[in-house]
Length: 386
Image (cartoon, rainbow, N blue to C red; front, top):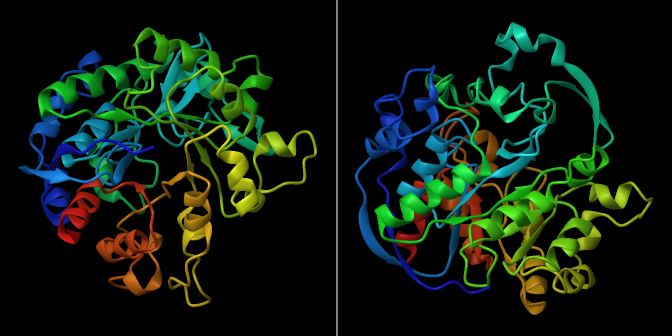
C-alpha cells in the first residue's frame, strides 16, 4: 500500500536524545497524571526538530521510542512521534473486563511493578503460552482499574539502564488512549501519526474466551478508523485471525513472520507449515490474498553469516513485491547486541553501534519500511540518504 508523502520532523542525533533521557520533567509516580498530559510535557523537552519532506518509506516506532523510554507507554509513543515516526505500534492484550491494553506480552511481570504489589501476590501463576510454560502475572487476570494501579518499567534494564530512570512513572495505556494520543499529536505536529496495532497471541486469548479481534474491530469502528484511507495497519504472527480480520477490516493487514518456528494457529491443529513456508514465493502469494504486507524478522531479509555479519539478501523482498506486498522488517535497534558484527562499535553489547549503516544496507535490499526502537536514527538516515 503506497502512502502519500508528508511532512515530518527530523530529529537530532541519537547522542543528543540519549543525553536528554534524564532531563524531561515527569509526573509523580502516583496518581493519574503519570500517563496523562505530563507525557506531553516530558516529550516536549526532547531535542529540537526541524521539518523536511519525506518519501513513502514507512518508519514505525516499535513499541514507541523504546530505545529511550519504557516500551508501550504514552511517553514512549509520544517521543517516537515527535522524533518523526509515521506510525506508533501498540501490541494489544486484553484485561479481564475485555479492555485492550498495550503490553508486549500477556505476562506483565517483566514490564510493570506488579511484583511490588502485595495485594496481587496471589495472582502469580504458571500458564501455557503458545505451548511454553510461563510463570508470572497475566493481564487477563486483572481488571483495567487494577492494571491502572501498576506502573511500567524497563523490560531490558541490563541493556538500557538509562531507561530505568523512568521506571514507575507511567501507567499501562489502553488502546483507546493510544488512539487519542495519535490524534492529539497529529493536530499538534501538523501531520498524521498512524497506528500499527498487533494482536498478541490470538489463539491463546481465544482459548481463554477473550478473543482480541472483536474488540479491535469494535474500537476501530468506534473511532471511524475502519476505512481504506485511515492511517492504520493491523498485524499478527498468526494467519487465521488475519484472514478473519480481512473480512471485517478495510485497513491493510500485515503478516508477521519469524526466522524460526511456525504460526501457533498452525501448530495447534498439526499443520506442518512453518514461517519459512509463509515467506516462500508460494506462501507470499497466499499472504497477498488477505494482507497488504509482510513483516519479517530482519534476518529473513538479510541473514547473518558465520561471523555474525550481514550475508547475501534472500529473495524475500523481490518475491513479496512480485506478490504485491510491502515489506516492513523488524527490529532495528542501536545497541551492539542487536546489530550485525560489522556495525558494532565495541565489545560492550550495550554500547551504541552503527545503526545508520545497518538501515542503509536494508534499504538497499529494497524494504519499504521498518520497525525501530530508535526513530530518530531511522529518520536521520532516510534524510541523509536523499
